[in-house]
Amino acid sequence: MENALDVPQPKNRNSLLRRMRQEWPLHLLMVPAIIITIIFSYGPMYGILMAFQDFRPGLGFTGSPWIGLDNFRFIFAQAQFRRAVFNTFFISIGRVFFGVLAAVIFSLLLNEVRSTFNKRVFQTIVYVPHFVSWIIMAGIMRNILAWDGMLNSIIVLFGREPIAFLSNPAVFPWTMIFSDVWKSFGFGTVVYLAAITSIDPGLYESAVVDGGGRIRQAVSITLPMIMPIIILITTLNLGTVLTTGFDPVYNLYSPAVFSTGDIISTYVFRLGLQNGRFAIGTAVGLFQSVVSLVMMSTSLWIAYRFANYKVF
Image 1 (cartoon, rainbow, N blue to C red):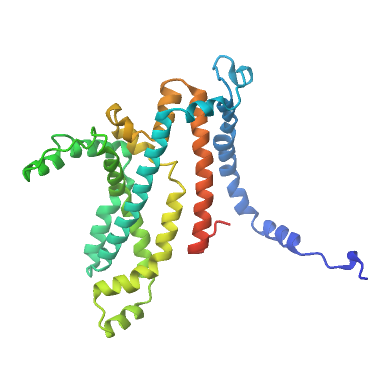
Image 2: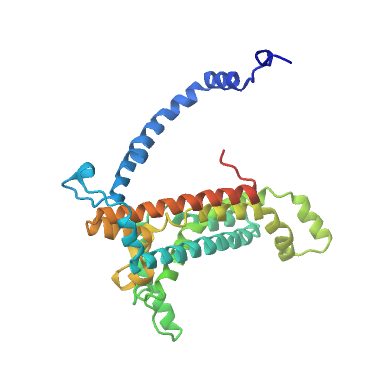
């Protein structure tokens, strides 16, 4: 029987040490980012204790009484919290679906523009809103969507009644969805156009020989070739469903539309900071983080399964 000591040891450790010696400047560059992440991301996690306490600022973390899961029982019993969860999923999923749809359609249309100058002009026009902060965008949206704003003036011009985009509970979620799509779909257009330009031109030449028109080429060649990118972007966006949307909603909503416009992030802000119920707000935030972690892990698995996208 061969002695276990005579068996050659794996070289993984030596390879790892050799790579670290070769790449130590790169690791050194990461140190400031690691320190900042520890201070501002992991350090504040100590405050999660508030979710399990009857937290009182005067007593601090160590002096506040421990109440276990009572805060979670309280929030799950609140109709406002359940409504905020539903609103979050509705607005976020609508934003993801219509955002991807708009970006894909515009990319296909833009790909048909033969003038490079015109293509760059259109692409810049839809890309600029992505860089505008939601504070500025909210002011623009309020002017456009006001009762006597530009959009309602056009609606009245066609003989229709004005629409209360920002104060009607039934309309407000759709206002949020399409406002976010208008602001962000230009960024997705860049990604899909890059994917389209990498398609082999020979496929289109073969389609022309077979009598395929522009629409047939887009349906039979372009869409199938960029489908992995569409799946990847969609699944990665689904992983952030519960953690995005605070800026547009907070800057545009009002008490009149709390029933359909209040999402988890704004609910935490109003409950925890504005009303001073820090423990309840922390419990809601912790619930949001745990569910977001599960959804993010699931989305990464789906991205790996269907688009061969790996983080590690």
